[in-house]
Length: 286
Ligand SMILES: CC(C)(COP(=O)(O)OP(=O)(O)OC[C@H]1O[C@@H](n2cnc3c(N)ncnc32)[C@H](O[C@H]2O[C@H](COP(=O)(O)OP(=O)(O)OP(=O)(O)O)[C@@H](O)[C@H]2O)[C@@H]1O)[C@@H](O)C(=O)NCCC(=O)NCCS
Ligand SMILES: Nc1ncnc2[nH]cnc12
Image: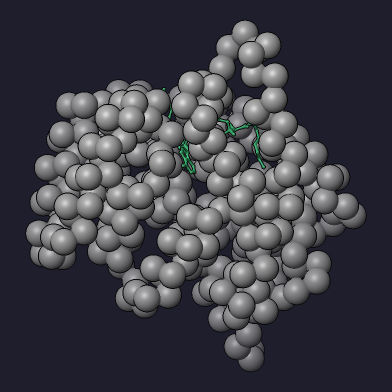
């Protein structure tokens, strides 16, 4: 298994997410959703800037000697990656959350692959990866300490102080339960590839993810609106889903709501599908 192939899987996953349409409140080729400061070209520039860091995350895991060393290395790379992204997007936050999640997942995967092959990990439904991520990210808990001393809070820090919401950090510390218990079981049930499979996954995620972006913009009422609207769409047939999603997009633009966390989980879903494909191709005799 070469490092480049795994890093490239992350790149193509982010590209696939932006191209998927229609995504209520989010950027896609049809609509910029509830965003005045970004479009598909902003995301293309962001992905290009992040590309070299994905291999660095994975390689850091492959060569790490201890988990604390790996954590420190990943956060150092992560800050450099975030700065490169912001330079490429003129300061617009396209993928801060995605960079965070891909960074720790790629690093944990590299660490795990010091002992196991990708085929073994995929055959086990990625089960060993989640406790490994939870172990590697334990240092993230420090992000929640002494926040009252900080002059400025990020959106996530403010949500933690005001509502006790832990956002993407909480997911990482818990070993990404949304991937393990929502995304992967869904992907295993729906073998068909294609947009409808991911649009339906998006609806499932919007119905249950405590999306920090939606909370930041719309508060608990905004989050309830998005989750209730998505629950309704769970029962819409495939033939009617694109139209219903476009209608919800119009409403979310009106209310200025954008489920950025759900978008990142879609990227991660494409990524786990790509890893399963890599494991399959890698196991086939030449
Ligand atoms: C840990 C950081 C991500 C710090 O960021 P922050 O403190 O803001 O953390 P959160 O708000 O908790 O979440 C950050 C992003 O994570 C995504 N997200 C939200 N909810 C969830 C969830 N429940 N589970 C998983 N992921 C979630 C989301 O990211 C996506 O949306 C952003 C784009 O949408 P937009 O609405 O434009 O966002 P903003 O511009 O912020 O809002 P507006 O001003 O426009 O209204 C984009 O980031 C997507 O990826 C959340 O935004 C991390 O930045 C950090 O610590 N960085 C330092 C470097 C580092 O350590 N990296 C680790 C590498 S291993
Ligand atoms: N397509 C998208 N639109 C808005 N925010 C996002 N964050 C990640 N992907 C996104």
